[in-house]
Image 1 (cartoon, rainbow, N blue to C red):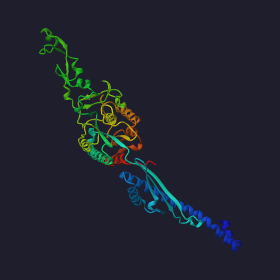
Image 2 (image 1 turned 90 degrees about the vertical axis):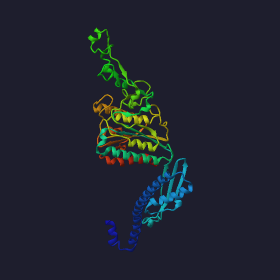
Image 3 (image 1 turned 135 degrees about the vertical axis):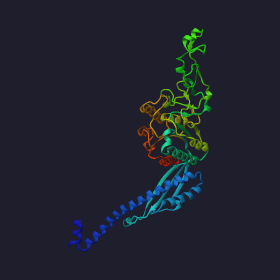
Image 4 (image 1 turned 180 degrees about the vertical axis):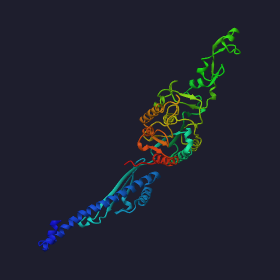
Length: 448
């Protein structure tokens, strides 16, 4: 600047030829500055164009199939409505919409930015454009809802809000299905047990030895389990209740007998399987791997396998009742079962590239009880953690929701991605959480 000041203010600067040279030097300086300003404005316009193009692609995908004329007409209308004010000249012919393959849309737009300043150096316009692609009508969806139905869900309005939120999710998924069967949902209410229902009484995947050892009658009064009964002695002449009077009256003092109850008295629940079979989704082909029948210890709604009977799904949600203690593992395991083809639930489709499978796991408390009793929380947590790891390794994506209480680290680590974990502080937040998940599941996502 000192040099320029000398030229302008000094003796040499007052000479006409130097003044002319200085004025000429200002032109490229202004041009460079103007080009930078125009580039920033053009880039801002391009960002607006890209957003409008993305919105147009998603809107058109939801309307497909459309003819080319409909794509051109409706595409331009949607694009214009989404665009806002920009410094780029665009005409309908500048928006090109093509269908390069089944279930795919490609959108390109190009226009001319008219410079405000850089025209002084001869730049009168330069191109600005955007590109996007979207898929439509290809992906199918299977979703398992593993929903905590424990007694603590009765507090803080949690069960009421859960029912409302879950039904909203069902409505979102129903509307996302272009054809019957494109979206299917299963509902897995759980506490310490799950309820498969008495209609499965003849299922080969059930085991009855535990149930029969706990439900029956002893021929010696006062003993209500097989283990306690068979450790007792009775007289073959039942009127005598002591060994001495029995034998003095020509009776025999023998082991008591346990008679299992009729299986028709089973109330429809099952409990954890042996060892790690639940955490690995082991096929139920032997006594050790089958599902132990158990009398329902508390109220519990039956599970509903995958279906697109939306009325039935809503009704099952309404039937949920809060009761019992918490065993997250069994809820996750049965959600997993509902998404696989083998026993115990066989409604799922075979894995394929056009099918996505998700589990939504919700609980409001720590693990407190399973088949082996009120074990320490860490022992049951380890089973839950193993099931989470294995279900994700099998290719299923997992959302987890913690409602006010529960093991945050366990649930956060169980989710497929940290963004798929939700920590709810008040029950009223459940609706927005389920709406967000439903939107993610139902939305068509940009491929590029």
